[in-house]
Length: 325
Image (cartoon, rainbow, N blue to C red):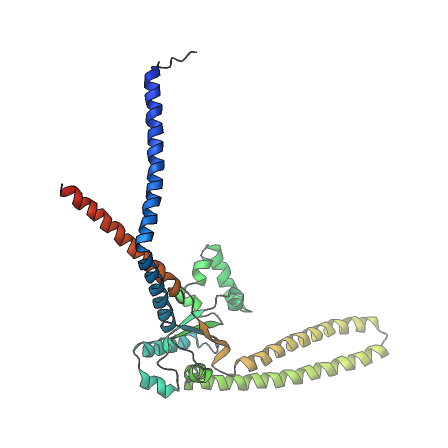
């Protein structure tokens, strides 16, 4: 199969090559011309650019020093089902901070009032701690997972409130102290007559459980010692077999009691406050977004504005000269 190519005259081919080479030459010339014009622009405006550079640097340093903000975090654990209570307390406190209600905050014992900007609360997402040893919660998680909405459900506002640990995030314009911020905050969160009564009763119940369990464990130890003595004296295999089955149940009961005692002692520590403060970190300098970076942003911003203005002015002068002809 043959293909018929059009016969292009030799003269036309030479003209095309000349035009292509001319366009390439014009393009190269335009690049060098632009570079030369840029060099002349820098030469004419070098002093102005340096002034803008140092002006932007100085302005950025000044703003960075005056716009310093600090972050503070307190991880808390609400006890006795006080999750909703905790969230309502934080909402109230944040509204008073936003309204700059210094009288209210002073009554609570806050000392670093002018520096406080806001306070927020968010749950620490932990499905394993959320489920714990609660079989009903485990069944609920399985049911949600089957529907494919586990991630969405875990972040749901109603669900997330029930996580055991929550993060309180506070912003301030200056450095704060634990005595002036954290301590008054925790006193405010734990100031509840209702939950304080529940706390006292829970602690009483835990002490009773610990005492009773210790007594039962001692009784079990006595039974085990008695069995050990009797087993050495007895040679009846049938009696030994029956007693061995009972012994396994007793030992299992003792193991469960020991585990329960460990949990009781941990609860005795965790339940010493309605809202238990697990840890706190203060005075973390905020470097998110443009915080602390204005010293780098402002010089380039001022130079950029100057360059755009110069280009627009040049374009305007060209249009003006064109229409005045």
